Image (cartoon, rainbow, N blue to C red; front, side, top):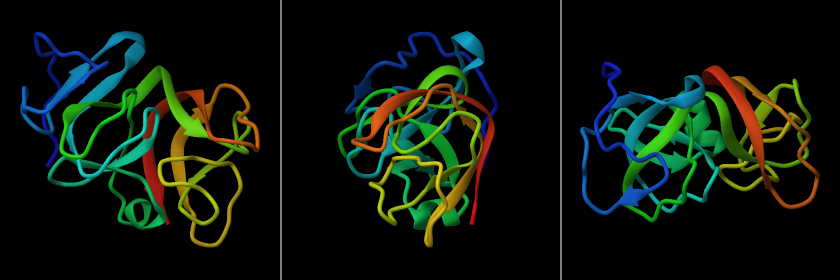
Amino acid sequence: MVQEAYSPVGANYASTSTTCDFKLGGRSIGADGTEWIYVQADGAITKYDCVGVDENFQATAVTSTIGGAAWLPGFAQVAFADNEYGWVATRGSNIYVRAKSAVPDSQLYVGTSGTAAGVVVSTSATGRVALNGVVLVTTASAGTAEAIEILATHPFFTA
């Protein structure tokens, strides 16, 4: 169920809380055309992970299974402990994602086939799921996953 966008007073996109301070699934408009959704973490989420948000607004670091289930993609701009509440970006510019072995303007993929949960790459492999509507602004090296700026227009997963 998609909630209407609003800009709640006191929304802080750079922090999490152990208490539910806003309506789960609530949306907010931020700077640089960003849109945010209020979620609860279903497991620990690393800062800049690509996450999947399910119908109950539970966010999980994305894997092939989550991407294949076509959950809503989001991008955690802060780390979450399990069960913490906070905002994840769903679109806009000047947001970041953990990436490796990825180049600007290429198709992005998610999945645990050789890649950690929450990390995007630009090479297809068995078991990976496409992340559409998102482009990297700079190149991500083949080493450890790093925070890379993205532009997200209308992101969605396709198996």
